Image 1: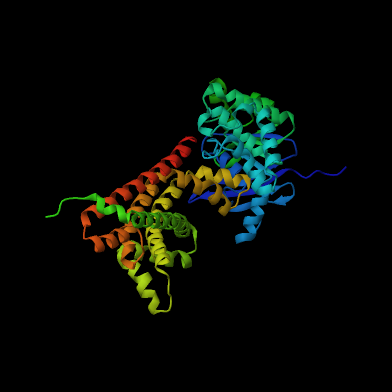
Image 2 (image 1 turned 180 degrees about the horizontal axis):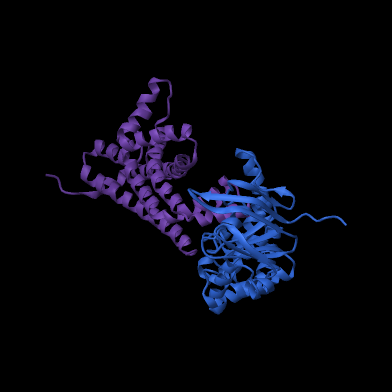
Amino acid sequence: MSTQLPMVEVRGARKSFGAVEVLKGIDLSVDRGQIVAIIGPSGSGKSTLLRSINHLESLNSGEVWLDGVQVNQKLHGQAFERHINKVRQQMGMVFQHFNLFPHLTVLENISMGPIILKGMTRSDAHALAHSLLSKVGLADKIDAYPSRLSGGQKQRVAIARALAMQPKVMLFDEATSALDPELVDEVNAVMKQLAAEHMTMLIVTHEMRFAGEVADRVLFMDGGVVVEEGPPGDMFRAPQKERTRTFLKKYLSA
Amino acid sequence: MQGLDFTVVAPYWDLLLIGAWWTAVLTVSAGALSFVGGILFAVIVLYAPVIVAYPVRALMWVFMGTPLLLQLFLIYFGLVQIGIDIPALAAGIVGLGLHFAVYNADIIRAGIVAVDVGQTEGARSIGFGKWQTLRHVVIPQAIRNTAPPIGGNLIALLKESSIVSVIGIAELVHSAQLAISETFRPFEFYITAAALYYILNLVLEAALRLFERHVEASR
């Protein structure tokens, strides 16, 4: 049997902001089609970990790999630019504050990446955008500007925009944290649909219930280290570490 | 004392309209140069290596710190001395264009800095390079957000373009002066020229409003 390469692998990741070390040696391996939820208190380093996977943060030491290619290669200047732009095309990222382009319509937001970066024809890219919008339930908003959308709709467009690049992995950085509670479900539903299609996903979240429903594995981070990890059933019902228990108690009782 | 008699303007109407036409040509050309130059200067000051950024900043400082009239004299009369002979119209366009490019650059630079960092992260996360991100995401938003003051500069440029009459460009004020030298009726011709400037400005403001309405559609 051939051993399969992990889709995402992080080895010994360390990262400091000034004198504060936010990642203190993280190892993480995510298999193809696996869904990993990363939970933990604010400032635990979970967002930084996610952002360093597509090099929005550069690690001080350690390695990040995507499907057998090192993301943070020791290249310089233009060579690294070319490399990282290629790599990022294969990773979709969804942000807490959506980061849609307000000067472009929903259609343009989604089709711009495929047209400019992949050389897709305008009509193919528009067809792709249309099918992705149907998938997230927003086909009727194709010509709207982002300012006309609710938070939940914005985030679904942002997911469609990321999917338009046909990424190998999707990174969600607190995708529902900025949403009104009643808008959270529509975004979660799209993420569940992706899970059903076996998209590899890393999900930084504060929503324990959702993490429990969708994730194959849950990572609990605190103080820049992975305190504990395991299948969601074990993690939520019988956490081994005291720190995990006190953290989860606050969330699960709420 | 002479009474006012605007019928003296009639025989010179064509001359004045030709002057107004050249004022429009100057404004559009120098305006385009000041816009593109403003973006270019802003990007250079923000992102270019110091070896490029410092000389450009020095040039900007010179253009901001000295009178436009002097700059025009230098470009038109001064450069000839070192072998660079520029036709008057080109000298006028370059002088006006660069002068206002410096003011636009300051505005656009502030506009670029004010675009949320999340926009850059959003674009970079898709795989856009630095330049692509600037070109397709950051600069278009910076321009939209700074459209009112840039439009204000364009209106100022239209009016300031009268100054290039001193290097002999046959724009509106120059035409009026020509007519006055033949008729000795300064009041009628300057009033008429002023009215023509006002009309040109109305057209320009209408165009700017059209652009702002287009921008409003995305807000």
